[in-house]
Length: 379
Image (cartoon, rainbow, N blue to C red; front, side, top):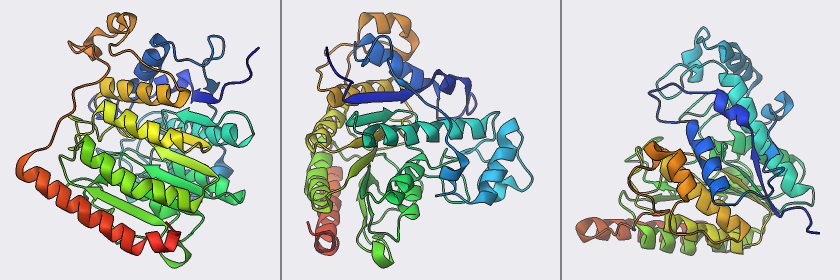
């Protein structure tokens, strides 16, 4: 008889009850699409208990990261009407609409991330994946970038309060500014964000010299990349910077934000990571053999979100996937799949002047990090 799984999904069908609105780029439907593809590929840990059910976070956990004032304002917005002066808290903008259940949605996502932490720390699974999580832009008292509660920061704060050392690794196309801000002054959390350069994309931050303050100096690592950065360059930068820092820091837990908006042809990003390249990063992370809380994040082409997170989940489980999407999935989701039934798209290679500029920036960023941060962390 086999024991409990080493990898678990934390999910809830209740996620499907919420929507940012028909014209908003963040489509909650991508979550169910991903779960459908995982199931079609035969990757569910169990047919009887395919996932651990997510439950809402408790307010005491939110208060580790967010102000009581902001939480109360977000509660007031739960009915779908913007509270008085909600704009002061980032609510009601095009990015952060006030929709029915906005607080309930945020509690459930955050609760799923907290549950991932419980799973990997209780001596059972080594890896727990919350595809709904990774809402990394929310600040202490402000919604930002489609994010109302910062579930990664809440989950990490619980771990820090338990005396654990945590690496937070963010590969979303956007800088993981909210998580960085939450731990900018501590050396208990090493935040590493690889993202499109802040001069070219929201939130306009995440430069190499943003490296923490006080006891946290050297423990915030930012790796901005030029638009167009492809698989080979991305992987080179990643290997030069990330494994040496992670191994030197010796974390008790790894938390990753696996936004898929760094993939080619994402609706908001301009990097050129392929799904195969994304999977290559997942394999490197898996090889570290750390307790791993994996979270979703950005991604604005739903079918690519499903492809990439299914690929990541297969890597986490140590299983191979076929080159083609399962026929049952294609038949069930013809509009989302379209004509391309491959699991991955061919890599896009950056060439010419753009390639040289991207390489020059990457060299400068890597050199800067090695010069200023490696000695502090001990890499």
